[in-house]
Amino acid sequence: MELLLNNCISEKDIQAYQEDVKRINDMINNQTGAGSDYLGWADWPINYDKEELERIIKDAQYVREHFDVLVVCGIGGSYLGARAALEALNGLKSPDKLEIIFMGQTFSPNYVAQVMEYLKGKKFAINVISKSGTTTETSISFRLLKELLEKQVGKKEAQKAIYATTDKEKGALKTLCNQEGYSTYVLPSNIGGRFSVLTAVGLFPLAAAGIDVKAMLLGAKQAREEYNNTDLKNNLCYRYAITRDYMLRHGKPVEMFVTYEPQMSQISEWLKQLFGESEGKEKKGLFPASATFSTDLHSLGQYIQDGTPLLFETIINVVNPKQDIIIPHDDEDLDGLNYLEGKNLAFVNQKAFEGTLKAHTEEGGVPCNVITLDKLDAQELGHLFYFFMRACAMSAYLLDINPFNQPGVEIYKKNMFHLLGKKGY
Ligand code: PA5
Image (cartoon, rainbow, N blue to C red; front, side):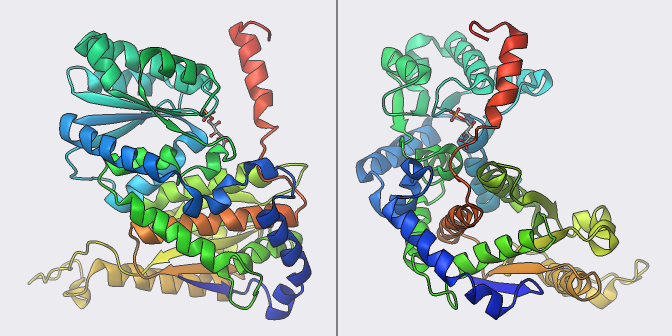
């Protein structure tokens, strides 16, 4: 991985953070900062439950062999990481024999009805994921899915097709699992939803999709070793975290995550949740936005180049895609594209990236962080997930914010429950 900070911050300004970074790195390692009960993710790549991982891989293999569809039912941190990794690694039109679809992340009657209709008559399993076990979107969807499954295969077979990921001890879902005897995996109590992608929350659906989850954990372990230090010349994770803080304090309140791969757009969604929910408190924090280029250069490109100068970009550039396509020769050349014949699309995409970077930084004056990855596989992605989680903890603490709570999210829920007539609201 490489990180270039184009027009973002000087070396001198990075070094000025040395004391703060040292203090916060100690806070993370010694678990002394605000919300430190939720720092379990920091050492997870070495502390994860090895036996549970083997069980996850075995059960996932069973699902691959016995079902056509796995419905993953969860929302927020119990949804975004798995979807992001699945799409980034397997693509948007995966030919894999097990189809993975998501439910539980919306109240949309259209979406829910369509998924239910699609599942009718299909051999499907369910992975319900909820730490609290009480999230309304997930609970409603799970009730519907469970009913459909029981109708199709009977209660006994349904019990064998339901896999739950939840808290070790508490919550309504845990009670239901105990009663029904579902296979259950643990979302550790010291890891919050948006930091949970490397636990069973992400690993079970990803293993079911045929992804090498051990490689993913290995990548995260390497990242943990690489970034747990305060050498600001070399620690890319903390250099990135510092840049974010510096941008916010220097008139750039919006961070736009950019990829040149539509199959990575859900990585941006995961990043928006990670940073938005961790930092957006006490009237502070960068606003996380996202764009997929070159598609969005034809929509947002104008604004980024010439509009209100409020944003900086964090671009994830993957140099070598898994697949490529060569542009063919055409005898008539009526479209005038023969100057590109024999070139592959990865080459064109890279030139689009280089040309845009120059336009945005030099003429547009937009600061751009560029994270360059040679390729994206399970190991690199595990590394990337850890990189961003550690950077998030560092930059939230630089703002003196507890990264691990989300008090603001409860307010809409209270209003909604009141309007829905839930007891006690
Ligand atoms: O990051 C978080 O904590 C949230 O986004 C939760 O993951 C989300 O609200 C879902 O919660 P639960 O897993 O309890 O259903």
